[in-house]
Image (cartoon, rainbow, N blue to C red; front, top):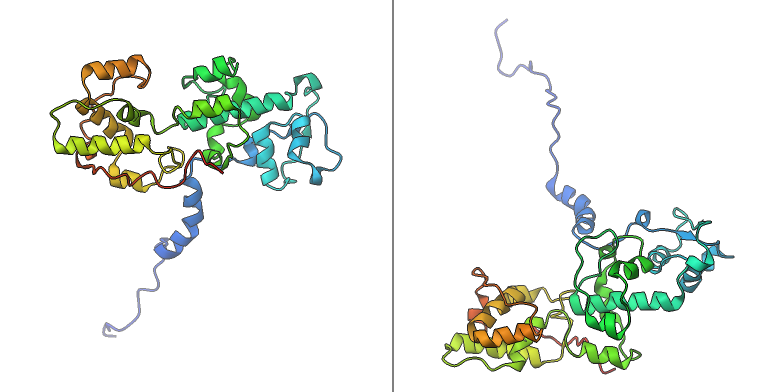
Length: 305
């Protein structure tokens, strides 16, 4: 019988290969990507639900109840935020005796310690498991009398890595009830503004080109304006990087260009700067900065109401 090109003889091959639909896969992975892209977010598996004794009515227990029974503050907030999940029930820890449970006053001081770090350094203090310990302000050690290791205050309110607890909560705190010493200290500067500081205290040297004068005027305007959450590193407006580049690295270069060696040395000696800036050759945005302040925004850190 003669061969026919139309005759079916190959069958249906099974290559064992699956071709995905890119759009459907993107929809499927969207939430996973959103979750995985974030540095913050606490798993219920990471918190401790230990208490000295169970509340009379678990479903009605409050944050104050949990603290009095020895649960750590941030752990309790996460647990309550999850609506008291039965998947992670409260558990009695026989070793959690009354004398080992910190008082609410001690908890309050620990929260303030953490808050102060976030506002002034844009980071949490180091817990007992961390080897990267930021410097502790004299205000905390000397004025406030909080001279224990920083891990003591972190571990008092948190059993997990505090970086997972979204620090943006600081933005919603009201200052009205704060002590005067604290308000005065915050007035000296908050995170994101240290390298702007010299521009409101020192006069730039003579003989500068117009581009450096424009940049220095911009830095001076920002330094003298009320501090805002748009500039604070924890809540910084993402458009700032696009419009002005990396602020700290550009400001460091600008300081080196517009102030004298004697001025910079004095800034370091008087702790206006932690150290002399290091030249960052790849960061030259400041040479195109206009003098107008287009980054401060209106979300003031120190609100009057």
